[in-house]
Length: 163
Image 1 (cartoon, one colour):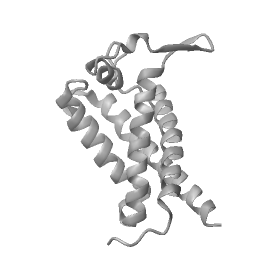
Image 2 (image 1 turned 120 degrees about the horizontal axis):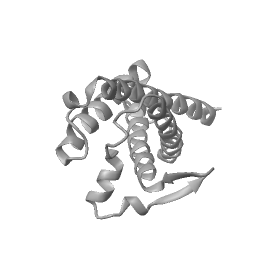
Image 3 (image 1 turned 60 degrees about the vertical axis):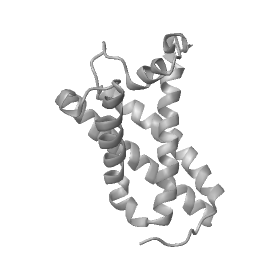
């Protein structure tokens, strides 16, 4: 099931960082089209920052006359990078982890693990059965597109590094 690494760890780290950043942008785009929560709800990254003692309300910049919270977005991007690093390394060691373009991995880690267990336990997100169908649809579709993007970037960059 496991096999020795074919690619250097440094290469995998670089691929994971790039894949994490790009996929975080994809997930943000999906959440714009399929909002995962009501407009009045606090997004989990903002709730986590507040829980850690940061004033997320002051972590803003203006781009194109739009106020953007860099704290919440940065937290979301960092989460995506960490998961992409783990995924890229795991698929390198155990290719079966990338079955179906990684979608089962993404659903297990992000939808079930993060959004279904960890965030509700921390009190920054509702339990899955309290999310409503729109929230669940957004999470399932968004996570599938997010991890699929990580897998696409992984394949493209590792193919290039092999050339």
